[in-house]
Image 1 (tube, rainbow, N blue to C red):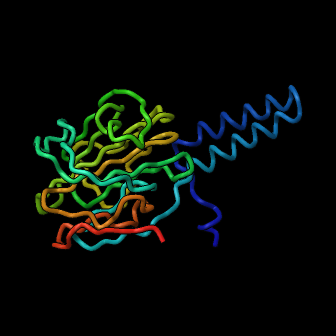
Image 2: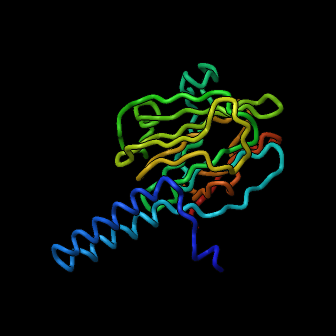
Length: 228
């Protein structure tokens, strides 16, 4: 019960929470009602930077959602060149995060970080396909212990102005492990290895660290879905 009510806060949020509360106090001294507006802003910052614990499936071969949000139309696209995944299109699973989603990002598979590259760019609406190419991004690649490579990309959005990534090159990582976040609206792209079909469908809600988006050991074709 306490875990569901007292959700941990990501450390990147504390400066914003503290600043919002300090502003609430100062505004309240100027005019009482402004304190409550500032307190509302403090509550939103606390809500935005929540970092709830997740239960991650641990079977080898599973690719886990790196972000909370809505799965966008799944397409084949050439991965960012900095990932060195080749110049042929791969299946891309994109997850759009609105301002109400948990914004903590998690590693999609066990392995080692074998590529890490930041690229500045625009701040287009992250729900648009061209955001994957044009927006500010942090590209990461994890080499799974059997040698399979998986690319995933943090993408800033229309409101997002800061990508935070704590991963380091060569770092061993585990699926579901927190590695960063994107502030105030964003997108996460995952590039699946050739021949691997996604097991999520467009407009499905993904839960970071819990939703399985692909199975590297499965021959199942891509799934279909419908709203009910």
